[in-house]
Amino acid sequence: MDSFKVLFCLFHGRKLQSRLDRAHAGYISSRQENHEQLQQAGKVVEDIEFTPLPATASPVQSWGRRKMKRLALAFVALTVPVYLAGCGGGSTIRSQFTPPASITSGTGTTGTSGTGTSGTSGTGTSGTSGTGTSGTSGTGTSGTSGTGTSGTSGTGTSGTSGTGTSGTSGTQPTSTPPSTSEPQGTVISDVQTASGNWKSWGQGAPNYIDCSPSPCNGYAWSMKYGITLPSLSNDATKFTIDGTKAYGDALFSAQLMGTNAPDLKDSDHTLLPTLHHFTYDVDFYVTDAAITQVLEFDISMYMNGVGMIFGTQCNYLGDKDWDIWDNTNKHWVSTGIPCKMVNGWNHLTIHVQRMSDNTLLYQSIELNGTNYALNISYPPGTAPSSWWGVTVNYQMDGDSKPDPNTTYLDNFTFTYW
Image (cartoon, rainbow, N blue to C red; front, side, top):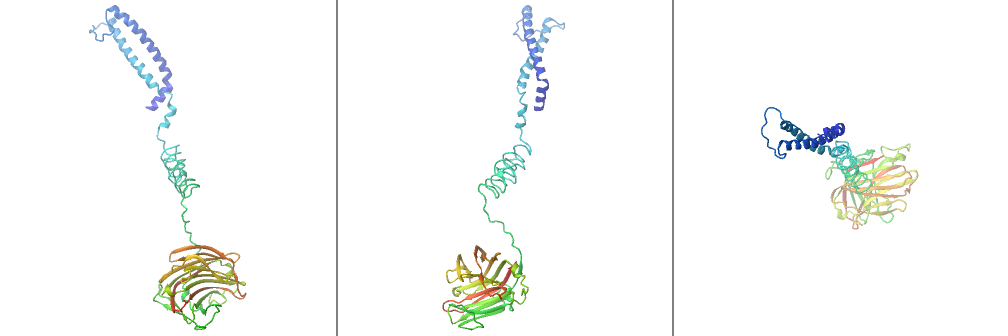
């Protein structure tokens, strides 16, 4: 109907209007003439009931035909102008429709904004405003604004502002950055079982001078391989400390690379200079935390007269925090991070890094599923120039009595790259 109306207005509007004007003028003239004839015939114009006429045409009969034609013309004259009153509004017809996909507004799939994947705004496939998938701003992952598939403003997934993952402004999830898997590196597995790598010493205050074998200087300790109970792999290693001196230490060290290592000797000194990342990962079993003064887990690296000891200890009967080693000042520094080890099995992961200038970066400590970021760095220390290698250490410190104590290590891996 709208199409007919437009065509009618464009092609026949003016011509029909002129015809109607002429018909209306003729109607007025005929009515006056007819009124005169009726007066002559002695008829009343307003009387609409007529006496049947004979078959022969008479002036009255001719008047009746003219009357009917005039009535028809009058109907057209009254109706068509009303219809024509809508002509000239064709330019607004399109805006009255619900826009299809991909015009200025509406509901669709690719609006510029909105709550969706990529709309600018609006609710529509490609509308300028509304609710859509890819809004320019709003609440969404990356919208610029608005709610819609492709509207200009609203709530959307990809908005520049608003609440969204990737918006420029607004409330955005700070979110934990997605975990990226670190390089696999080279993994040395089951370190606790490598009997050829391990050496041990006793030591104590005030000078902490190593002595060996056990017992010596009032300190006693031992190692036993192949423990199946308690064990997670049926191949744990047992570590003990005993003696007569309070606060005695038992230091156990596995030589993994370098001069004293059974396998990776790095005789041409080409491997160690390339290594910068180290991970110490182990399950350790506590028999009685109430008498476990300190448990220490270290990574040590020596080359070119530089000593880098990544020392990490759980000071359980002290301040109950994790401590890290300051190489230049040769003392422990509390991190303020609690060490919440428990009786039974505990899982520990330590990440450290050697920087390009040999600065030691303590990156993180994770105990029993709780990760603590450190990002604390210290300058390196010194070492005899003949020392070349990498070791991992495990140390047990005795309490004040001293009480004999036993712990176990299992699934001990060392990763480097």
